[in-house]
Every structure is written in structure tokens, then in C-alpha cells.
Amino acid sequence: MIELLRDLVFDYTIRNVALGSAILGILGGALGSFAVLRRQGLLGDALAHATLPGVCVAFMLAGTKNPAVLLLGAALSAGLGALLILAVVNGTRIKQDAALGIVLSVFFGAGIVLLTYIAGSGDAGQSGLDRFIFGQAATIVREDVVTMGVLAVAALAVTALLFKEFKLLSFDPAFAASLGFPVGALNVLLTALIVVAVVVGIQAVGVVLMAAMLITPAAAARQWTNRLSVMVCVSALFGATSGVGGALISASGSNLPTGPLIVLVATGILAVSLLLGWRHGFLWGWISGRRNRREALRRPA
Amino acid sequence: MRLVETKAPTDDSPLEVRGVTAAYGDEPVLWDVSFRVPDGELVAVVGPNGAGKTTLLKVIMGLMQPAAGRATVYGKPFKEARQLVGYVPQRGSVDWDFPTDALDVVQMGLYGKLGWFRRPGRKEREKAMECLEKVGMAGFAGRQISQLSGGQQQRVFLARALAQEARLYLTDEPFAGVDYKTEQAIVGLLRELKAAGGTVVVVHHDLATVSDYFDRVVILNRRLVAEGPVDEVFTRDNLADAYGGAVSYLAGAE
Image (cartoon, rainbow over all chains, first blue to last red):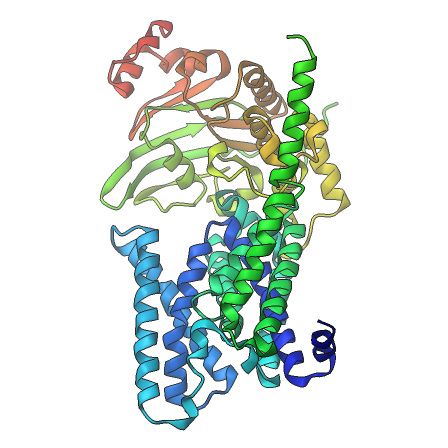
């Protein structure tokens, strides 16, 4: 444990891994709060899966594993996925959940086909692209951290600037529209920010489990507070804790894929929050329920 | 001597709907609806489910593009006059589990005036508090909104509209699911708005109370059935026309 902490400060690789995981956790947790409150957790899942073919195509076209190039491909691919979901929902009688399922599976399938094709092409530079499926935090290098950091700072800055607008959009979009806020454009922007959060996370967490980084910390944070601003911050903190926790376990030699480990840590935090969270946790509910019952019994009817 | 009003009243009617036809896909929901709401009246919009009442509000507020016709607020399109309008959506249209408290919701009524990026500050909080007081909810300012009763939630929504300091209020079923006492409190509030020179349009379900609460009524069933002062147009014939005759409370109407 002590050794791990020392590595965290002095070991170049471990430091990058921890920093990268913290960044993805903070961003996923913050934007995930909005996704969860707007019941768009599954949209995050579909968009995460939809990034995979973009990563492959970007690599095939550019012939490089430069993170900025791959993540740009991922973002464009996810954006295309989002547009397709909209087109299916608006243009056919297919409902939102089915549209999400269709886009998720088709993009992920295409991504796997492309990955297999690239692996068989004999290009020596391709090794390691499959880390995008389940994530491998140990492969995060300085270059990745810089790319992730720039994207995260930009996305968080926009979120902070438009916090009031996003809150109103999430709580009461009809009222927001009546006040003159461009609800459609804000919607697109918030979805785009969620795409950024997904793109920042996929290298370490993988496209399959990235949605957990949006949903689980936010769901856990909700148990501790009744204020949106606090929820967003606590969720970011939980996200960072799970990211760093999972990534360090994975990077410290166990060689397990990072995505699943991060998700397990996040789920642990959620379990504790569900039990102890002082706004909605089971424990306080049980205690106050008992107290109320006792007082009701004491008083004659 | 009378104080001069800051916003000079115009000759234009607070709300004018002219030949509005609206449809979802091929399904027409409103058919050539026209009416005028005079200044300073309490107006009910009634009609059976699916009569297009909520669609009418959407068209008025520019949230839905009509296939034909137009609606104007004080003689202007809604987007040029939205500062004059307060809106109370249906209580069931939002998730009351949202992490926020009553005071915060009321402050949302000030977001339009605040404009982009600016956060509500002390001034906004005080203003919101005043509005909560007006609806008798000052003691619940810090209460998480899911812990409010249906009637209290409705009052918070009304307080939010009050914070808009509007002259025309559009309210979508403010009496739905509230108890008698709250209903009386809300009616009292709407009358105060009227007394202060406001105009209030209420999408309403309970035909039994129309005569007691409102000055005018718009009876709608996709097309306009009748429109005018309650004692003139709220008749058995008109209601039978709108609701198809199978309504027992027609006994209460003239």
C-alpha cells in the first residue's frame, strides 16, 4: 500500500495512469449527473459503444495512434451515433430504447469487425487498439494525459459557465423554452459534452463499461445531497476515486483490464452510499422510520 | 392622483389567437381556432381530453409551429413579448425528485431576466423569497421539492411564475390533484393577480367550478366551440357540443 502511494508520486507510469483516471472520473462524474437526472444514462452507453468504429477508422486513415487523432475519430463516430438515434426516433415509429439498442449494437459490431480486420492486416503499429474495448489504464502515457486534460478542462469550463441553463434544461425544459432559452441547442451541447466525457474515458475504461462512469458515481452522489451543485461535485469526486482506485489496482501488476476494476470500485461506493447516504440512504430511512413508529405508538390514537 | 404605470398599457389584447390550425403529423389537433382575451380577466380554457388545450398553449408560446394562423401577445409574436408572460406548466411535467429546493425552483422564474451565464445572487434570492411568501410557502423555502405535497408543489410553481413579474399568466391545470384548501388559496392568488391588472389564462378541467372562478371561458374541442363571458357561453348546449352530451354536471350549467 505504502509502496503504491510512493509510486503514485514518483513513478512516471503510475503517475500518468492515476492522473488520467482521475481526469476521466471527474469529467464522467460531473456530466453523468446531468445524464442521470435527465434519464439519459443509456444514451451514454450507446454513445460509448458508438465510439469504437471511429477509433478504428481514425487509425486506418491516419496510420497513427496519436491520442488526439483517435479521440477525434471516436467523437465523430459517437456524434454520428447520436444523430442516428435522433433520426430513428423522429423518422420512424421505433421508440427511444429500441433506437439506443440498435445504434449501440450496430456501431459496436462494426467496431469489432474493423478491429479484427486491422489486427489481420499485419500492421505492426496496430497492437493495443483492442484496449479500447475493456480499457487498459496502464497504457496511458503523458501524451494521453495532456489530451484528456485539455478536453476535460474545456468541457468542465462550459458546464460551469452554463450551469444555470443546464439545470433549468434538466429540470423543466418547457419552462426554459418559455423563457426563451434555445432548448434544442442546449440539448445538443449537453449531449456533445457527454460525448467528450465518454471520449476522454474510453482508453482507460473501455467502450463497453464507460457508461458506468457516467451513471454510477452520479447515482451514488444523489444519495448524499439534495442540491444539484453539490451532487455534481460529489459525483466528480466519486468518479475520480473510482478511476484512480481501479486504475492503480490494474496498473500495479495484476494486469487485469482497468474498466471492470474501475466499475467495481464505483459500484462499491454506490453500495455504501445507498446504505449510508444521509439524504436517501436505507440506514437513515430505517432509523427515522423506527423513531416515527415508536412516537406514533406512544401517543394514544 | 393615480400613479402612472411603468409599463404603459396598450390597446392590444393580452392574447389574441387568429385562425390557428395545428397538427402532429397528419393528425389535426386544433382547427381554425380564433379568440381574443380582453385585459384583466380570468379566463378558463376547457374541453375534453385531447381537445388541444395544451397544444394551444404550446402554439401561443411558440413551442410549436402552427400549420396556419398565429397567436399574438400584446400585439406581438410571443418571442418579442415573453417578458410580459408568466408560465405555469403542468405539475406532472417535471421530475419532483430533482435535487433542488423550493427557493431554487422559484428563482428559476428569474433566469429569463438574468440572461445567459449570470447566476442568481442575493437580490434574486430575496425576490424569490417574497414570491414564496405570497403563496404562503415561505416556511418551506429550503425544503427538497419531493418532500412537498402536491398542493405545495403547485404553489411553488405559481410562486415561480410570480417571480416573472408578468402581465399575462398562462397556467396549465393549476388545480389538478390539489385539495380544496389549496384550490381556494390558488383561486385567491389568481384573483389578486387580476386585481393588480394582470390577465390569467387557465387550462381547466373541473367544469363545476368554472362559473365560480372565471370571468370568461374558451370551450374547445379541436375547433372552437364557444368563447366569451361565462354567463353567456357556458351553456348546456355549448358543453354538449364540446363533450358529446354525456356529462352529468351539465345540470349545474344554465
